[in-house]
Length: 301
Image 1 (tube, helix red, strand yellow):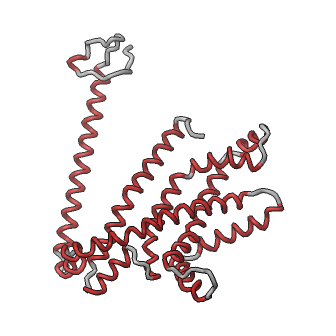
Image 2 (cartoon, rainbow, N blue to C red):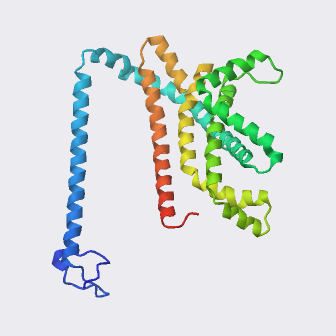
């Protein structure tokens, strides 16, 4: 019997032994050739179907009666060139909000998750408050939370409280997204087997030390992919601060569109957000696939 493991040879060199004496069988060579041919055929079919679909969509859209008007209103190259610099200037505000709010969301979400998983009757009020917070802000639409914070807080006329729409809009984003992230962290904490905590306690660690050094590191590693997905959503929703008057990418596009009655700037702003989101989405997919491979190989606890 021929041992089928090692580098693949061509049919012409099938009878030439390697340094270790291995000779691939003709059956394996034929099987590998069939796999390569099938892969090429699948790639060709996928490419052809993609081209056909794109051509059909192009013909249907450009052949519609209202396409000339739609093209001038939404896809004007002149307005796109005019709007792009201002949209990119406004995008800097979105990026700053993403960085600051993302960090605050992770910290607050982790604290809420830890509060919800604390044990003992003495921590019941803290658990109840954390549960009420997450239930309320997960159910409250983000746009309503933004309106309540941006317009409600200044109406109170509190001394020392800012009325900056950027700060208030960022606070509303943190309030809403921390509730979602808290549930992600809590799911990760509860997915750690109780034996891990028991083993840590048997080694002399306190409950807090077991949570900090044993449970949380494992929980955070397990929830990295959904956390990245939440950050992708946060990146897109930073554009909602424009309702408060903050000049971000969306509001910059709105200013140009309002002056010229052309909606191409909105399309430009949307494409800029898409271009910013795709790398983060692909990075999330890569991290997810990497963690799945490590878990399948037993390298991830």
